[in-house]
Image (cartoon, rainbow, N blue to C red):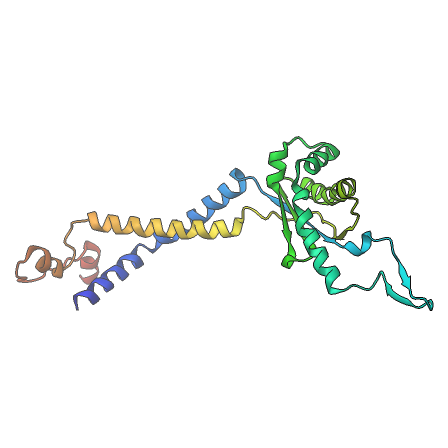
Length: 245
């Protein structure tokens, strides 16, 4: 019974102070949105996809038997070719972020950044351990992310030819100009700020209620003073008395 009374009391308390809770939600969302938009640098991502194909680097087009019939053409791809290309992709992928490749990208685009910084902006992923490699570039500028993502595969292919004589790097999808930032998520941060504002408002209401030591109901007299209740005097304001007369 006492538990039900407490729940009802807090329900009335929060209902009475609902404006504080609403204010907390609104202010939390607004402040979070302003901080996210004005104090945190936006990050833009551009993505290029390449494939490592050993078939494109071979020079044999067709082989013939003694009767002049073709046994295997270059366009025929076996499971062994795919597995070999996957291993080549895994082996050559670290070259994408090597100092030699990154420094040439910096020089080609005339970027004002160090190798260490640009290397951290680039993420390479071998898709399903296969021949395909995703290259993601994240910077503060959409144009810069776009330029780097499209320049890196060309420089990588050129350096790979010089180092290993391998020329089987093909671009599947070139990067497109990013239109929206990937970080920070403004809407998500606004929601988090609103929830935080609500939590602070609830805490504030509870603290104020805890510090308020006034006796507001007859039940408070019996509970906190442990005195018997003899009677209740109803208080009426002057306006109601004049209206009754």
